[in-house]
Structures are given as structure tokens and as C-alpha cells.
Image 1 (cartoon, rainbow, N blue to C red):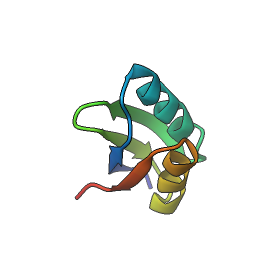
Image 2 (cartoon, one colour):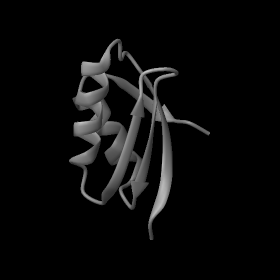
Image 3 (cartoon, rainbow, N blue to C red):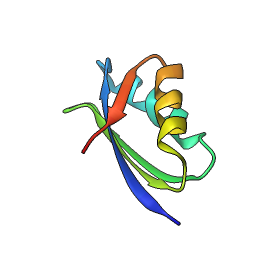
Image 4 (cartoon, rainbow, N blue to C red):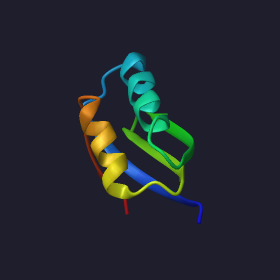
Length: 69
């Protein structure tokens, strides 16, 4: 089932950070679409990837993430 997940992401400071984070999230199996924003620091991910996998991808890219309720 395809759904949307919103993440709060901290640590991004520039457009390169956004691109790096977007690429990391797009590489997660099950992700079909990603939109990362610098301000206020977040991402909307569409697909069926698990929350844990999405957060791990952001952390592996060098940033902090948590679910945005």
C-alpha cells in the first residue's frame, strides 16, 4: 500500500544538503517520490518504505530525522 510519510530533518544547511538527503531517501526500496525542503527542514516521502528505513537513510546521509506528526 502506498502512503505518505512526513519527516522532520535537522542538520541541513544548504541546497547541497537537500540534494544529498533527497538522493539518500530515493535510494530506499519502496520509495516512489520524495520532496525535501530546507526550511523548515523536512521531507514528504511517498511509497511503502518503512519509517525505520527512511530515518536510517537520513542518518546515514549525516542528518537527524524523526516522524513529523
